[in-house]
Image 1 (spheres, rainbow, N blue to C red):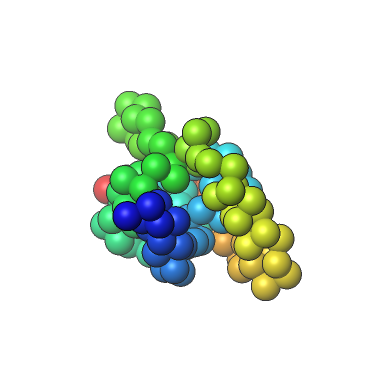
Image 2 (cartoon, rainbow, N blue to C red):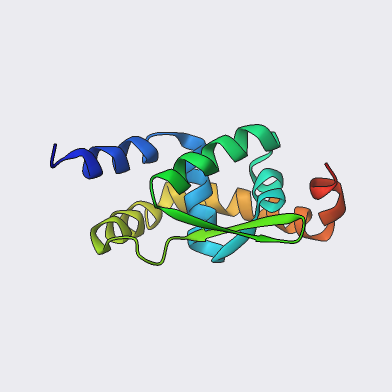
Length: 118
């Protein structure tokens, strides 16, 4: 069906955790899975499951660097998807959510070993 990429994209956005991951990557460019886990205060298996879905949907890319896996938005993401994300993340409520995540991310970055030890 022609609409499958469209509906698949919106299905990926319909989950709060996946939307928060995308918002963090939109704001920060690239993050390690341990940073995402700390910022969202979720378990590593839960975050990894959502990251895998976003990767399968070609919305994000991953890159292994030694022990850690880093994620970023897919550079070949269609422009219409980028426009939707930009509109979504420009909403005031989403800005407040991002601020809370970034505050925790700052703590995770200073205590990287605690979040990435497992």
